[in-house]
Every structure is written in C-alpha cells, then in structure tokens.
Amino acid sequence: MNRTLPPMSMQRDESGFAIVTAVMVIMIVTILGLVTLRLSLHSSDTTASNRKRVQAVGAAEAGIDFALARMQKDAALPCTLADTLQTEPTISRYSATITYRDANGVVLACPAGGFLTSGTPKTAVIVSQGTTNAKAFGNRAMQALVRLDPAVGSTGFDKAIFSNSTITVANNTDVYGENGPDGDIYTNGDFVCDSGNQHYRGNIIAPAGSISFLQKCTVDGDLYARNDVKTTNNALIAHDIKSSKGNIALSGATEVRHDAIANGTNTGGIVRNNRVAGANIPDPVVQSMPTLDFDAAAWTAGGYNDQTTINDCSTGSTSPLYAAIKSIETATAPKLIRTTCKVFLTRDLKLNRNLAIFADGGFDMSNNFNLMSTASTVRDMHFIVPSSAVTTTPCVEPGIKTDTGSTFFDTVHYLMYTPCKITLKNANGGYGQIYGGTVSIENNFTFHYAPVSVFGATNTTPATTYTLDIAYKREIPSS
Image (tube, rainbow, N blue to C red; front, side, top):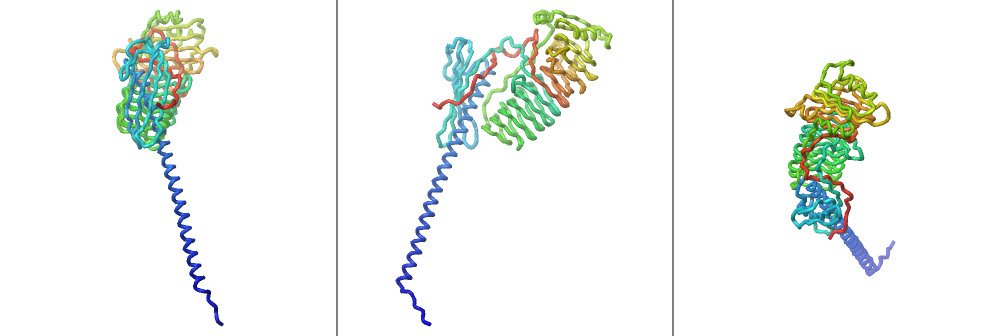
C-alpha cells in the first residue's frame, strides 16, 4: 500500500510555527520575570522605608526618654540633647530641643546647646527628631509635654518598696500599684529576683547596683540600673531596660516590649523596638533613705495628740506596753507610742483609730498576728525604728520581722521603716509602704502600694531634682 507524504512546504510551515510559539513563550516568561523583579524591588524599597520609619521613631522616642532622665537627675536643666545610637541594622540618631515655661506660661531663657539660665520651670515641651543612615525616606519626630515639680521639701516616701541596700525577693510575689503601674521598687544596692512567678506593676530602679532576674519575672514598667542587667529565664519587661554603665544580657526567651539601651554590650532576648549598645545615658537618680526620727510637734500637727512613752520592756498580756498598744481598739483619736523596747506582736490587733509606734528595739510579729480595722474604715499603722536608734549600717537589728502566719488586712495601710533589715514571710502582704536598710521577702507575698502619711521626716536627696508628670507623648510631623 502506497502512502502519500505531505509536501515539503507544509513540513517547513509547521516547523516555523513551533519556533514562533517558543519565542512567544520566552517573551511571556521574560515579561513575567520583569514584573516579578519590579514587584520585588518595590517590596524591598517599601520594607527599607518601613524599617527606616520604625527606627527613626524609636530614635525620636529615645531622645524624649533621655531628656526626661536628664531633667530628673541634673540640677542644670538641659536645653538641647543629641546622640548617635548604635542600633541594628543601621545607625540611628536623635536631636531633642526642650522649651521651658514658668507658671504664667512665659518662655524661659534657654540657649541652644546650653542649660536653663533663670526662672522656675513649671512645664516643658520636648521635641525630638529621629533619623537613621538608611537610604530611604522616613525621618520621624516625637513631642512630649511635661509638668515639673521641684522635689524641695519632699519626705522621700514615694515608693512601694525602698531598700538602702540589696533587695532579695523569692517565691510567688505580686506587687500592685495604687493607680496602675506606679508600685515602684527602689534599691541603692542590687535587685535579685531569684524565684519564679513574680509580677511587679511599676519600675525597678537600682542607681548604684545591678538587676538580676534568675527566674520568670514580669515588670509592667522599666528596669533601670547603673550596672549590669541580666536574665537567665523567661522574663517580660513591658517597657524599657536601661543600663547606664554596664551591659545587658538577656536569655533567649526574655521579651522587652520597648527599648533595651546599654552603655556596654547588649545581647540576647527579643527586643520589640530599639536595641542600643554603646549609648551615653545618665545614671538613674540616686535617692538617699529618708531620715525618720520622733518629732512630737510634727506628729501633733498631724493629729496624733495622744502620745505616750513606755520603757517597761516586760512582755505578756499584762505588760504596760502591750496594754497601751491594745488600747487602740477602743481609742477615739489617733495614738502614738514611743518606746526603747522591742515590740512583740503575737495576737490580733484591731485599730479603731490610726496608730504609730516608734520602737528603738524593732518589731517581731509572729504566732498568727493579724492586723485589721474595727470597721470598714481604713486606718493607718506605722511600724517605725527611728533613724537615731541605729549608729552603724548595714545592720540586722533593730529590724522588722513577720512570720508566715501574719496577715495584714486591706482595712489597714501600714508603713514599715527601719535603717536595718526587714524580713517578710507573709502570704498576704497587705497595703502600704516598706522602707528598710535591707529588704528580704520570702514565700507567697502579695503587696499593694498605698501611700501612708509620714510626719517629721527629712529627705537628703538633692532638692534641685524634679518630679515629672507626663501630660502626653505623641508623634508630630518631622521638620
């Protein structure tokens, strides 16, 4: 059977069609590649711009924060501040200008590059420009309005817990603020969180020492130390970590939700905003432990007209000292007791009025001691070892000590004060303030910051520092 073959011209036509098809496919692929490249370049440019904007606003915020720190620390209020931050992956910078006004709204003289020259500032406006060396647009600016109140005459009793040396806290500890995260912890030594499940609703400040988180701890404010800050387990810091003279070393699971800024190295953890190493930042403001001695006139002016001195140190339910303390349960006016003895409290005490005890020998609360009010009205209780009772520090006695059975009910707000050691072993820490030469907290401790009125105290913290109240902090158009 004979097969008829197609003409040669038809075979050539089909071959040409295949070539055309191949060329068209190549063109389409090339066009798609160019489009993809263009999209990739656009995405890369957008990412670079976004990164620059994020770093720039972080740098601007850093300028605000550094200005606030300088305004709180220095006697001479700065007019301008500028610095370079060793951020990653690009270097960022800030430049801040501060305008001060007096109580009448008049702008005070403040030369560029200098310090406030005259007048008493009442408010300040801080404008901080932030930028980076990234090759993209996106400089940012932040503005803050601040009210300044001189610390002149302050008694220094503005912390939840104050230690003139090291603070050690163990086992499930919760410290609450009075109004949000204002339950500040302050130490002129080191702060050590050496056991897990601790939550602090305020700042932790160590102007002369270091901060160590050896277990899982949460802080709703800042960690601010002169020396090293380190974590060795899961930790959460809701705002900044700062080390003005040391290093920051964070465990891999530690999370910092704002900035981590160190004078030295800065490694580990997860930092949500800026990580800065080699920064030139001021030390935290140093506060001396306020002096608190018995001042009869000051306490009389504070409403404590009933003042009794008892130096019979016998113990038991029939002792004069115990009888005087117990009389507060039926008192109709605030009462103050002055004694050279050590006060042992082993039974329930119900306050019908406010009570203050100055005890040169310290306090020992044990045997399920319970402190409460006779009604729903909140009463004040002062456990005070006067400054004059101590000649040498650091010291353990005369101190203040509670055992695991002591309970402080929420109807009493108390102040514990001793230049020596405070040891708290209490499942319910109650409400008030704790001021000690050394503070050691053990076991399950829940404490609420509640300011307690103090009379006759003096504060040796430099009176030229200011207390700052931030009205707002916001982003504004960059100039």
